[in-house]
Image (spheres, rainbow, N blue to C red):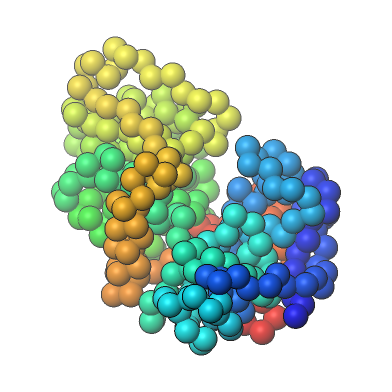
Amino acid sequence: MKTHAMLLRENGPPTNLELTEMPVQTLGERDVLIEMKAAGVSYVDMLQIAGQYQVKPHLPFVPGQEGSGIVAEIGPSVRKFAVGDRVITSHSTGAWAERAVLDERRVTALPDGIDFVAAAGFRSNYATALLALQRARLQAGEVLLVHSAAGGVGMATVHIGKLMGATVIGTSSSDEKLAVVKAQGADHVVNYSDGFRDEVKSLTGGKGADVIFDPVGGDVFDESMRCINYLGRIVVIGFTGGRPALAKTNHLLIKDASVIGMTVGSFSAHEPEAAARNAEQILTWVGEGKLTPYVSHTLPLARAAEALELLRQRKVVSKAVLTMSDA
């Protein structure tokens, strides 16, 4: 059996990707063959293709870490799934293909009511968002400030923050993207191109935000420290702004504030049962229609390089997804 896939033979720009036909690996005892319908596109994919990510797959490889599809065949010891089941998939690499073989432990049943495109890219984003808000101990009625709210994890944080009963303020450098963030449930939006401290203070009656979600770092973190409420919490998940921030401890002392770092990878490794419960909770919310992932761009598999370029140019809002030829 063969499959079409986007293959990378040499690290470099996305144009190094080529659509090719290649053999599908043989199923093991606990493996499932998935007819892939859609696959998410992320910054991790872009970094892996460029050879700049900390985990460097052996060349050649097929990129893609998450997707959705239908079970086409199962190994002899598989008990969780049957042929025809709709599923969500988690890959180290290999999602950008029409067929993929995975251990059944990397496959999750897809709830009714969500299509393959929406399902393809939400798993890691919502897992990060939920864990961040748990670590921050977000309570109903508190003010949640979400930086880069138009990004995949930012949008997921807006969604879950509202579900948890918070008043959500979303930031971005684009008014066009902020319009989407507002439509997706944020109570207030702020363009932080010229700063955000004064507007956040104004929106909160001078108090500041109770919880601040920060994937940006750098100057954004510094300014966040100046609009945080008493007993406020900043959750740091990255530093896309270019430099890790240095917290001024005098600000922490004055506000009795906390800075919290987290990664889903560490959480899953150290607390696998809790991570599994979070994944189940997210799927329950999706199945109940309480969470609906937002996808701004959908492109066919053969245009993967174009999808990555849209991501690089920051034209993607929340998520871009690749669809397979028979999706």
